[in-house]
Length: 92
Image (tube, rainbow, N blue to C red):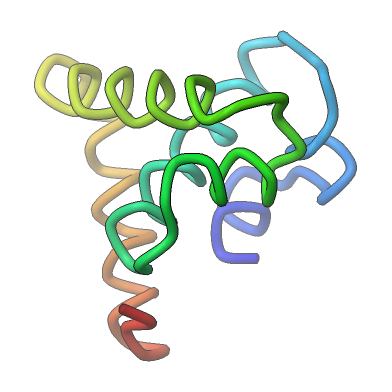
């Protein structure tokens, strides 16, 4: 919900098949944050996000890792949501 609220998108959008950038970015961030804050496997993350296989989740995490190094706005968003996760409890 933190990612949905931050980017003002719906559950249907994040688990849908849209390739629009304003949906794809948050979907990638959601996969990254799930991976870093839970013990779910890439395959399980793919299922949570309604993706066909684990590669979607793995690629999402890789894209976020690269993007936070070069895009301050992106890294600030990930950092802000991570802080909110930590406030509400780490689910690892």
